[in-house]
Amino acid sequence: MNSFGRNFRITSFGESHGAVVGVIIDGCPAGMKLTVQDIQPLLDRRRPGTSPLTSSRNEMDRVEMLSGIFEGQTTGAPIALIVRNENQNSKDYEELREKFRPGHADFTYQEKYGIRDHRGGGRSSGRETIGRVAAGAVALKYLSEYGITVTGKILLVHGKTNPEEIEREISSAKEAGDSVGGIVEIIAAGCPPGLGDPVFGKLDALIAGAMMGIGAVKGVEIGDGFAVSGKFGSENNDPMNKDGFLSNHAGGILGGISSGQDIVVRIAVKPTPSIAKVQQTRDIHGNVVEISVGGRHDPCIVPRIVPVAEAMLALVLMDCMLEQVKYR
Image 1 (tube, one colour):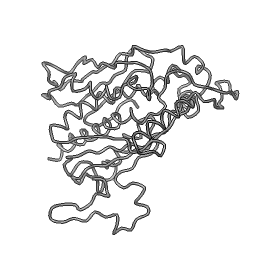
Image 2 (cartoon, rainbow, N blue to C red):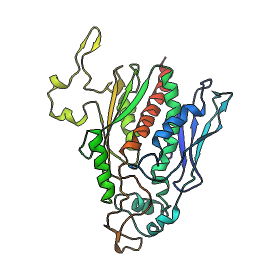
Image 3 (spheres, rainbow, N blue to C red):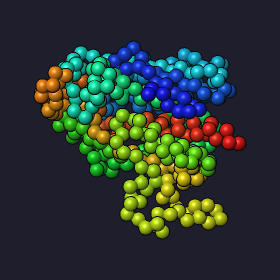
Image 4 (tube, one colour):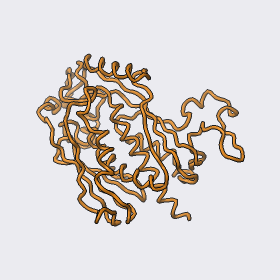
């Protein structure tokens, strides 16, 4: 599936080493003011080449609007957004034509389709997230008009929580030809109560699916998440008084529907699978071989995944806001 959403629907397209990556947005309400300046800042936070701790692939990731906008406003027609790939080094990936990277999607893509784009991973590359971020920026603009904000931050990297220690941990992994993972927290504030649907359209289920749809994410929790397994009900419940809730262990969602409190989401991000350290793998002929992955890769995906996670949460919330209109 390359599409996401029910009412605010997006379809991402493009490969890591293709001509462009982008997204088609369908279902955006007409009359919303929208310019490149609303989208570019989020893409700038996601783009590589901005720090020694990220991939050295130096892409400017300038967004172009191809349709759906007239005189600075959305028309209700599909919105097409693209970013051109300008700094590919496909020759760096020639060894991957026949070898599968451990921890990557190379093997599973080959098994499913019988063919794969080995240049940077094709659709399984992190560059695919550009379309999500561009669409998420549109959703963030829409949500802002209702006083809803979405912000993310790094909680820890490889067990470290102090920013300086995090930087050293990433640098150390990079020097060793290795990589590290971490945890990101995303909070949506200002959401009205009532978003989400009972049973199979639960808001927390939609959020979890959106977050797990990000390639590097291996775990999601809402509110206190896994910590609730060690609590009494009296500790985990959120008491109420006439002014509202007294705590937020539920993370802003009860029965799959938003409560009006902050929606709190955390994601576990795996270490980058493409590493220089020598590993054992197999090739397309079934032979056991060794591999040291070249090319330009992030020693830690965590910093650049923050805007991606913000975008995915915004997409879910906008979709649910538009769904809610049907009940009014």
